[in-house]
Image (tube, rainbow, N blue to C red; front, side, top):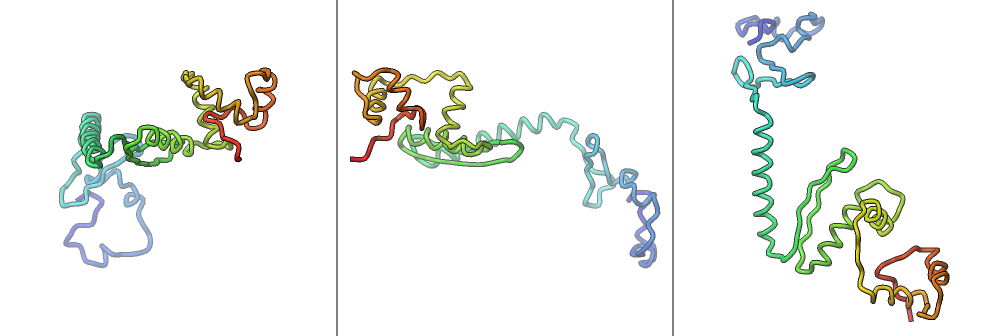
Length: 185
């Protein structure tokens, strides 16, 4: 019990008195039941202990918890019996978001991951545009098979006889989309 706490044997009226509070009753840091972790952060003992226990080696505990969490997530993901999968916890502008996906198709798993990620960021661009912008901004080189260009030309009703200027003009509206949306027949 802190020096400012009323004794247990005090009359109930003194312990439950309402109304005026003395300034020393407002300073919870003076209580033996409170320990300061760092500036503005405190631990308050909630049991019968006179003072709370404060673990000084918080970094080691955080590292141990991180290792345990990785081991548990590894077991969780492997229990889904899918060839590809992920369970993510990520921070976006201070908000925490979680997502998981499991698939036997590597392209589906990657597409789900990339789409989820760009949907979390605050942008006016569509998910397709945001993904393209992020890949360009991150200096990540992406190689596409030559047949991807053929599908782009076909989608815009262009042929090898058309000029690069024709291709640029055709792409002006929606930009370059790979894979290209095929025109409906």
